[in-house]
Length: 368
Image (cartoon, rainbow, N blue to C red; front, side, top):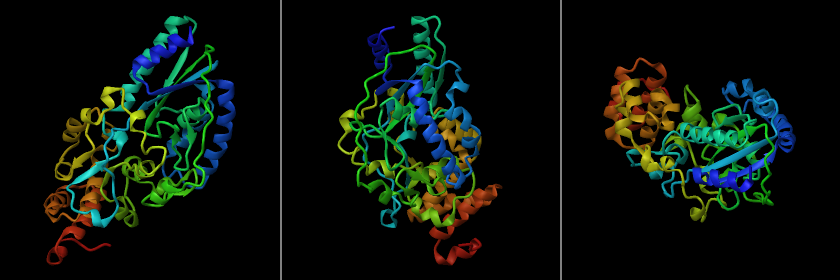
């Protein structure tokens, strides 16, 4: 197999970037980051994402998935949509009846899209070498994606914990293919670093970036609105602002993402926002979804399925409360009256108190 033939196949698939590294080189980096992860999780920064701990051995010891790994192909797919809509936590920006969706969530479900391409790439490797064995992973599997990406030369770890490509920024998905055949390594670029810049840390609405390269997931809006299945702490709700799913704050202010649009174009059509949910969601529509079936019918095939109806309605209640739009109280009141889920009712009551005129506040028990 020639590197030129492999590169042509990868480019034809629409990947924005790729790198190939020897597993022995990656192993050294994995050992270092396993210690970092253990300390991070021990301090509680992983919130209730216990699956990260359960997957630890597979994440940092890929040979458990493919015993005779020789090389790893790490690929990136841009998801920056070129829009300028930013989430905000400022009360001065109240008045919008929409919630902003993080850029990663705007197109179709990237897991399925990228997995299909990885299967095709795996089949190509096997067609070129009948002895080839592979293991594929998008970020839903037990793979330390960012460590692999750094090792393969796709970028460097930023202070916001993202992998940053100096010319493309950080708005890209990461996927990988382990293989037992030796592939020619790609040339590694000399990487810069964040230097003295702290824009991402200052921009984080909730202060989740507690130190350079260290994230406390318990405060992170992306965790709170997606992975978290329970109550969102009251002291963080106003800081979520109009972000209904995920958060891009730390990426949007990064100098490596500014002025890079010509390098950030989406090459895989299904990842474009016009083919998914778009950059924002109508709050009245979200608050009116009455069943899981209705939610699935509306959002099947998109990353929003991760939050489920329960999570998305919870988030919509918070964004509605932050919006200042009193007309939304009719929708919120229906949730209070019809939902049996105590968690949803509590978030709806919180929003109702913020939006209702004083004379109507006795309709809901005050619990601020």
